[in-house]
Image (cartoon, rainbow, N blue to C red; front, side, top):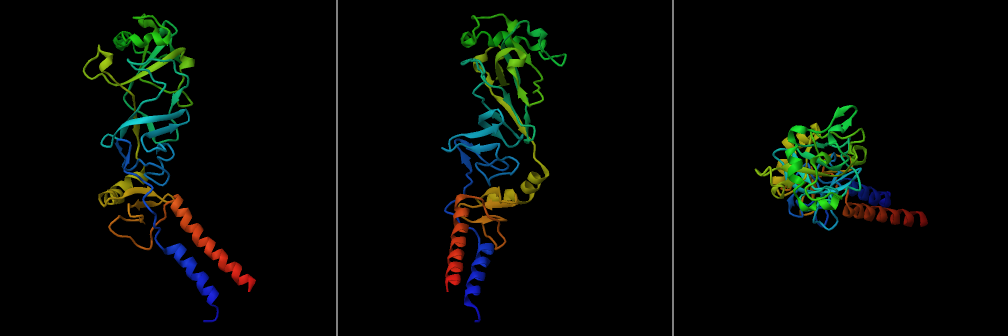
Length: 302
């Protein structure tokens, strides 16, 4: 062999490119807290759909799935994969058991695949009369549902908003349909209200707010990328025990618990596999690059 050094370097480069990435464990978890996490959701970078990251992640302690927007991070309390929707509980939101003034706006990102679902927003402790509330000249309060204001104002926690017990309902507004402003936000300061509540379900008890389900319903839209992967790849991957994710070029990957990242499923893999962008992936590449650097240094010193 004329140049064994070049043979060694060429071999290292070949293995760097073609050898399947083996990690100690998949960076993608199928559960976060009590929630089952399936495509298009993911727990960290490289997991789920690239359209959902960085909006949806699992908290560092692994106990809470979070939706993060430009206005803050909000706990996801439930997911319905059948209806492509989920429920969040913003800390700034009031409920019958706990009312407080909202220190920040609540909003969604226009560029994200998320939009408001069928929630009923109640604006609380507003400057009366709420019948005068308008956006661009259009009234924002639904007077036909004012009974919801009368019901929620029976909650003793209204005093936390600076209101007396059983306050007049002309300081409450059923904001329906809820529309965010041009920044994608619910701007309470502009509406001259102190707080808000959001109702997902009245639980067949329209006059008993202690039984209502509070939260903000959010719907998500699958893009062509997500639909293709769901129909053609992801179900196969998840049925084989893997988690669906993506590589540095946003190409589909099936991340397996045995450390293999496959382009198909966890029942087998080929040399055409993608690579998950995880700390273990970086370590393996840094190891190869370091070895290559040492060989180049030895060669140049000879």
